[in-house]
Image (tube, rainbow, N blue to C red; front, side, top):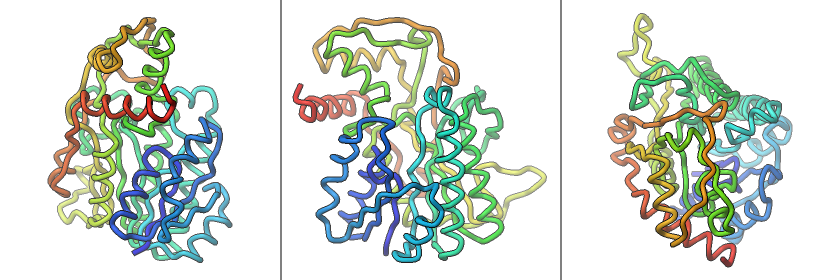
Length: 335
């Protein structure tokens, strides 16, 4: 088997590639190493991959259709795991074009390459942000998600629609993954745990949005990786009970499926901050701010489908996950 992983220098992508290599699976990794955040962090993530003879790294943009086609032609992957994307809800307010280029144009090129090169299974990153204005909790893949409140969320919803179209037209098996607030070692510097840890250690105030009245289904990265790995071994099948009169958004008559990958245990933001303070042994200075545009006050994942299909669901506690991250942060940055 050969797996192509896009966004391989990213937080999740690098650790997915590592997990596959540990299972003796050949991996072709693509990343453009852009400067949305620290390029050195991205380069360091893949240092532990490049010496493995079963790993091939290619620096490329998903938006470059010709390069993507040539990579598929040369390496002929059986499975594609598309994790490359312009990430971040708040940044989508500042630079919307980056989201269209990477998340829409880039994903279109991946779909076309999968179609023409007879890929057996496309797994791709969606996001919990697709639930947008929904307030029925926990969020279920069987609920409609037609009211996004950020462009980032809209591009992820678009990815799901595009994937379904290719599953319908060309029989391409596609699996969408709605990640819920992933955190852990090697995380992105623009994410809450990273920002809070850095600020507290420097003695700077942390920004607490919605005056702290937020709840997030924080999901530890190792649980995300294990879920993805197991899903590489489960190609979606058509739902023979699917009914167009009462359409189920989470399945289809085509080989298409979406899953929530979340801890199924939302945590209050202030409890999350307290756990960081306790691990660091430092009290945070807090700047309380209103809810930011594009943010939702609460996320909570229904993971029943995931557990049923792969006999696994995220389970790492916030205390353990935060402790692991801070240990890594201190070691990596020499703090």
